[in-house]
Image (tube, rainbow, N blue to C red; front, side):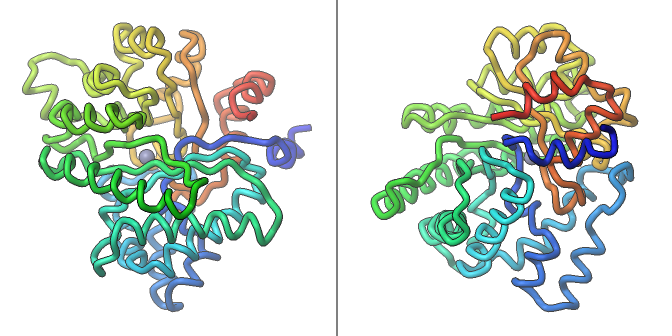
Length: 335
Ligand SMILES: [Zn+2]
């Protein structure tokens, strides 16, 4: 059974709720959007050992700078999303939320409509051409270290673009807006974007926030209190229906209770958290603790190309390394 576990997990129709578009540029996709030399360089930045931790989230994010240089045309965005569905099919991922920050793809003056159209038609066309149906939703994000008015204006422009693209593609599925950033930075509190989030909510979009991934020493000092779960609590206060990472909630019963009472899904990313050094070792990963607390959970890869891991391989780690029963895992991953 054990040797066949990976094959078995692959066959299960699964969901993936936390996958970054620019963190999913697998080598087979890279080869289609750049030359051999650049491909080799970018691949050298990928982490080929799942247990390798690099010294910080900031260093983990380095490959994105190179990848984003390539994703400045409609053509490359289309190829990326088109080819990514091949991976979804291979992994039998039948429900997936793909997130990205359109504001990072405008260096060559692409408009938000052009960006959304390229990504959406890429996803649709592969499914049509290869007769595979997967339920894809887009999540549009913004870096929350940007000033309040800038995030507000970015979100407003996203909404205008969605309305325009939807008049052409009625099946365009976008219902979530995300705030993300490296929380180790001092300006990482999501609270300053309350107005932008309120505006998004008023227009019937849901909110999802990256929170509780890495400790922010500055916050600990500033508040004179040791509350690593602060951003998780703030995210719940800001109506976030799902939390990305959320591992720091484990240090606060109050934060965990807030997640439970508000039925907030915590989207777990074991390999990513090890690689970014957000946890020192696997024993600090709170999956079991959250299970025992009856939190709503999902298992995700975050950036499968950069972490060099597929969703099925990631799921196997929960069974083999965290010793979670297969039956429990199946309930969490199945659609
Ligand atoms: Zn993420």
